Structure formats: C-alpha cells, structure tokens
Image (cartoon, rainbow, N blue to C red; front, side, top):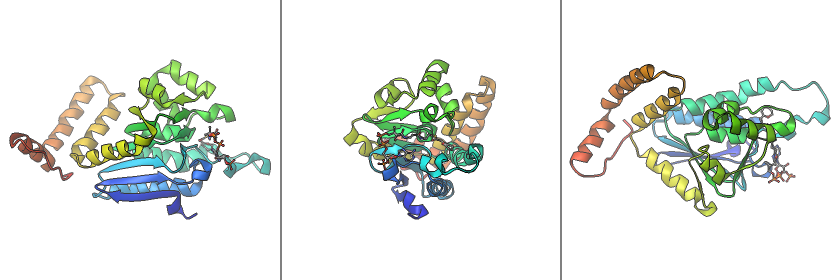
Length: 264
Ligand code: LHQ
C-alpha cells in the first residue's frame, strides 16, 4: 500500500477529510501511515483552501495505536528505541495538530487504543460513535501512555481518573468519555459521519482567523496566569478585529442576514 493509501484525503467545502486507512489492522500506525498523516496535516497548515480538518478511521476501528507487528520481539535483535519512534513519528504529528490554527474535528468511529486514543484527544472537537471505546492499552504491553496521553488525560480528567485508566487499561465507553468531558459527545453510530461532517463544514465556513486564535488561546490558558491571558486576549482581539471576517460578521448582524466568512 502506498503512503497516500494509508491515509485517504478529500477536500470539499473547506474541509480536509483524512481517513486512517489500514482497516485490517484497525488502522494501527506503520511508518507509511505516520508520514502520510503528517504530510496531510502540513497541507492543512499550508493550504488556505483548507479551513477545517476531519479525522476519522476506515472500517470498524478508529486507530489501535502503533502497529505492534512492526517490531515483533520474537524476531530477536536489539530492543527498539521507542523514544526515537516517538520523537520521529508521533510527537511531530501531535505538535502539528495542536499548532494548526484551524479546527480539527475527530470522528471516532470505533475502538481507539493506545496512541490512537491519545491522538483523538489532541483534536479540538471529538465526536464518537456510541459503540466506540477508548483504551489506554499501554499498561498491557509494559509501556506508558504516549502521544500526549499523560498530559491530556491528567489535564482533562484529573489524576484519579487518569491514573485508573492508564494503570488498568480498562476500556472507557464513548458515552462515559463524554460524561467525563474527555470528548465532546457520543452519537448514534449511524449518525456519526453526518454529524461530524456537518460540524466540520460549519467550522470551515466560519471566521478561520478568529477560530484559530481562539484555539490557541484556550490551549495556552492552562499554563498562563489570568494577567498573561488578558494580554494575549488583547493582542489576539486586535488581530481578529482587523480581519475582513470581523467586518463581515458585524455587517451581516446589522443587515440581519447570515454572514459569509471567507477565512480572511
Ligand atoms: C493490530 C493492532 C495493533 C497490529 C489490532 N498492531 N495489529 C508508541 C511508540 C512505539 C511503539 C509502541 O507504541 C507506541 C504507542 C502505542 O500505541 S502502544 C499501544 C499499541 N496498541 C495496542 O496495544 C492495542 C492492540 N490492540 C488491541 O488490544 C485490540 O486489537 C483492540 C482492543 C484495539 C481491539 O480488539 P478487537 O476488537 O478484539 O480486534 P482484534 O484484536 O481482533 O484486532 C483486529 C485485527 O487488527 C487483528 O488482526 P487479525 O489478522 O487477527 O484479524 C489484530 O491483530 C489487528 N490489530 N491492533 N496495534
């Protein structure tokens, strides 16, 4: 399978839809899929026609984390350097998703395990099919939650739930994940795709600069003082207030019509 086949991409109405596509392996990551996903998220950064990203998985799973068949210990040889794997493959992608100043919607269509779960949690708005579950599978194979897992679980859930999920690898059902605030919502399986697409399309039709700045400010809030955050809000609002989309938003309000944002 070529690199591009491991991540299907389609751009329509400002939404770049990325589908992890190794369904036989529950879309677990091999090197090709890592590189393909990174290439597509870079494209989302660079291409002004992309105003939102929708990430999902092909088949019955979302993503089962790293392809464990890639490094079969039964084949012998020296122990792998997994730190190098993270630095080379996972961490750049996580940083790109978080730093992308455009909304990233994740539609978790089925099981999300290991790094697969934590990549979903790095996205901005996560919808999951009610039948989906999230598994911090790392404890079962002697690893630690990576792909930002120790960070996002702890930030979002607090230590007690983060530790219980990570230490037991107990599956967390989509509805419970929503109840705990780990994802935005759990939806009926047959509604997931259409709800996620509607959401992504409406974000893509939004004021892209303002949405991007909002994403960044919310991400930075956790480590800033209120004073610092007020300064950042001032600076970001100054930029947003100079955008064509702000002028259009206010004009549309005054003219009692729907705003037509161009992402400028
Ligand atoms: C898989 C996988 C998989 C290969 C299902 N690999 N084939 C970072 C740094 C570097 C290295 C290490 O990792 C990391 C980050 C990580 O993500 S570590 C965590 C890796 N992931 C896991 O440990 C999860 C492993 N998978 C599972 O526990 C189960 O497959 C889950 C619970 C996800 C789903 O269970 P089932 O619904 O019962 O499906 P299944 O187990 O029958 O899987 C279906 C097929 O997919 C099967 O292949 P087969 O040929 O037998 O039909 C699996 O072997 C394959 N598959 N996950 N990660």
